[in-house]
Image 1 (cartoon, protein in one colour):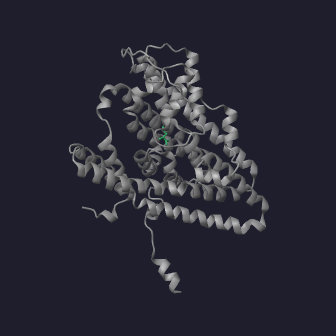
Image 2 (cartoon, helix red, strand yellow):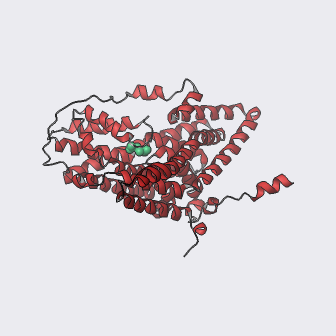
Image 3 (spheres, helix red, strand yellow):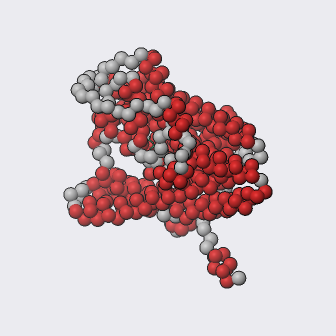
Length: 437
Ligand code: ASP
């Protein structure tokens, strides 16, 4: 048997996930046991899982700030940034529209809600989708420190871009600050590596707790809806993303998928694309060879405005709920669903379960009963994990495409199967050596 320490991080995280799942299922058999409930699930696994998630979130803000400033202050031409921004946003919106259409198409084909004959009994209010102007104004922070304290990714991106541009424009006098940010970026990436060392245990704890608490019986009733969402996620992953990657860059989709594995598993077990930013950024820059200039912008932006997996759930859920409640929606209504879901996803943070809140906006827009949400809630946590993994994969594909078009992709790194694998190990020896000198 291979020794634990010689296994790759991917293997360790995978083992952690499966072990957690099994432990969770075993603990279910002892759900009335106080020791299991209070000390294992509510104690040990809760604490380790929470520490892991919190440490990931802890580095998001400084990492995004450092890497964007670092990327933009090395820009020679401001027009590049504009071009980069437009390309990225166009690709993000296009993949989201494809995702919803795919999900609605599949849901029509399978008809998961047909025959349920439910009747709407109550109505409760939901938030309405933000207007485009609100979204745009909301991107500008009045106070950057407040934006960072609140973890408002879009506002942090805008401030970091402006800050980086100002450093570049200031030229020579600002060079020390530019160097400081390059160093800070390196340190933050090392911190990511450090936190990845607890990932297998963190993932194990999250999975054990989840599978202890989750209501697996709910899947039975909603199996068709569940399968439609999974099927559409699968198609988006293997057809849309792999096809786009091949068509726009000529890169190998298999190599891409093998390099995104770690980030995929992190997203799956945390159900948060925001918390996964550090890992996605690492995979995209160090494993796939996308320059920091591009990735520092596309990855955090994607984790906020590009939620293809979420859009898939919303598309499928809308059709499912319309069918279950026997509501006939027109073609115009479905167009409205695509538009609202795409708009609502902009400016909504990538955190667990937020997709359901956004769904309320979509349903209300076309007059569908909001209690439909209660119907699918039981299976949402598992689907949340799967769709978050697809969300971050979409961000990474677009990062590669945009980088390739800007000549910012290092093909040698991408084509090297083992690129950056040795960075999983941290060498502390030189700390002692340098202090002795
Ligand atoms: N959990 C998802 C994410 O963070 C959002 C959602 O669909 O609820 O990307």
